[in-house]
Image (cartoon, rainbow, N blue to C red; front, side, top):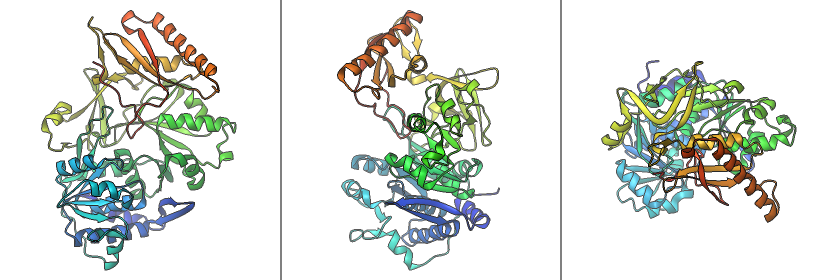
Length: 495
């Protein structure tokens, strides 16, 4: 398509789309709608503010909750050829300070709801720009300053120039600064075309899935519905009426429970969903059948920050329900090398910022090595076996994948008594920590019965597997496991 940068992408999209609704968002109970014309006008106005204050071609950080202003800020930074450095909304002042220093940030665009954390970070010479007006003296207000007028916008960056730096959520609590060039970034946005009219985005917009799908919707003529509070997800389904959304398996379970109360007739809930794009973890057996009863399709997405949000996208079918799908995306290819899933293509990241050693560990010969152990069946479907770094190495030389054991227990749990589970190595044996599903339990005696059923399930499993795979200890917990932005459990170190 001849794009060099996002300014080219936006110019092309503005020519093609003018009178559709680009964005919907909710303030209180009121839904606001932004047309394509207004969106691109707003991007020009916000871009002009950044240029007037000297932010063009600089590293410009962003921090904020999901909002229209967040998306405008991100699009405007890309539009003027600056490098967008994306910070998580729940970052501590210490994390903000460290990540801004690491990424050589000169400007920070922030949401005023996070003003206390930003001010406590002690950012020194970094120029602060508020997404809203009414900010403290000495702080630039992008919302107020936009009234000054539009400047000529030129973007001289090329396709191989740096476009965005963002931090991995990971499952170990350790973040790395992922770099995408213009081409790697816009390839994920322009090549990832899906058959929907409006998509609800509940994932944090600073996450690869959030900002990629958000811009993908806008530049491809669909509507981006911005969700801000996960507790209101089902209200967003009925109020925004999206025909698509990105979900994690935990939300699928909630949706299934809600649909079961109306005989899987989603129209009785006021929903209009057709496509559920699912990623982040495996979901329990039986979910697919129930979701299909309600007239929806589940499309499994396998991707990562380092692959630029691209990898495998495949409609889930009952004959391959545990698969992550086939290699069928346009801008990447997927393969298995020495048992590990690898990805190559236009969206694969340029490396970790200021960390060449970590980059060499996962990116070589043009392939991104995902760290996921995988197999492929005769039909070409991929199946995850576990994570290389999570493998439990026992003193007898046997290697155990905790994910494999967890999946086996989930599959055997026909009553769905297990809500969450983590299998781990513990003094040269296998242990499991389990959060029971107490949904039907009302008394302590009821809860004891649920725990007893889970213990019996684990004992039966351990009798049927090789001795080294047997689970020797079960610990029950009362609170959900800590999770990252995609809903994955943050695992302990197994070895």
